[in-house]
Image (cartoon, rainbow, N blue to C red):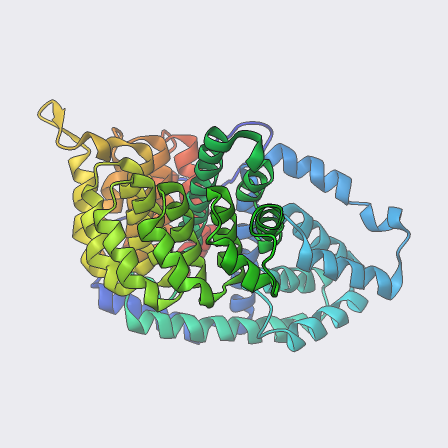
Length: 493
């Protein structure tokens, strides 16, 4: 597989998979289910090992040089630290659970494997006692480490865990093929929404700097922080609030923040709103709604974001009204995200309407939230966005829909909703040489989220195309790695 830098090559995966002569979808799915359920234990273990190893490996493939460097640095970490025996095992398991990146976790799993049976006992105990609470990714790393130890007890533990996965997959498949499970939101959509949220906060910080200068430095720092919490906002709001004419106010922290929403200083009201939102103080819902509809735009912007964090259903009607009517695009954007965070399904028609907004950012945000909602009624309007952005007869129907951000958001949204229509449109996007590469990469991820046999076949075909853009082929490979489809697992094996 061509790639930049010195990266491992994937052998034996050339040659397109036949797309003709497929049996009916229903028969194909039933056969897959029967084969999964009836497979022997050793095959199950091989499959689980392949899925765990390959999903981790290919997620690192795009960072090959960094991975090699980190692997070398981490190989002797425990030795240098002078930790041994039981403490060494505990330290490695802790690193596996709390590591900040895939490289750290994979190195910890490898080190545990080298320790053999003593590590196996600790891993089995950990897996059994925390099966219900451990995240799927962490459990996968533990299972991989257990397999690496070579302990004979690994087979039973692996087969039990695979059995749980099979039961879950059978239930999901019986519901609807090619659609996301109800309540399941793809990780890439959540990451995109978080990126939008951060962009809105940064925009607010920039606007405050223009309006107030150095007076809002600490507030800007809080808005730009990767990890959001109430501490910085509270500290800023109360320090500015208590140093002014309102210094006579008393009460606990929340009561003071509620009073600070009435401050004469706009930036104090903004900080107080953000603090109350992060604290999820539902007592702030009514004053925040008043701020959204009556205060100056920057304060209204912060109020919309705070209401999204609060999640109080009483705010839904007002947020929908502002999404439809507010003249400020950044408030329309923030109300869309707020409604998405609240899971307000009644907002779907309003969000669909905003797909024709005069601002690309509002269209993009609305599309992502529709993907998070997973409502099938949004599929056709989302497809219209993609189609209207294509050139036809020398012109494009809608130039705003040519923006990469809009198109990527729509593509991810279709992957979040799933279904036959979405799969077909995403296949068109992925195989269109005239489409922007970054949009086509997003289409690989979206098809991976759908994970239907049709989506898998398309992804395999794209990866097998040696002339395809390397980023798109890598995207197809990563997407295949995250599907729950048996054919994808066979492709890797």
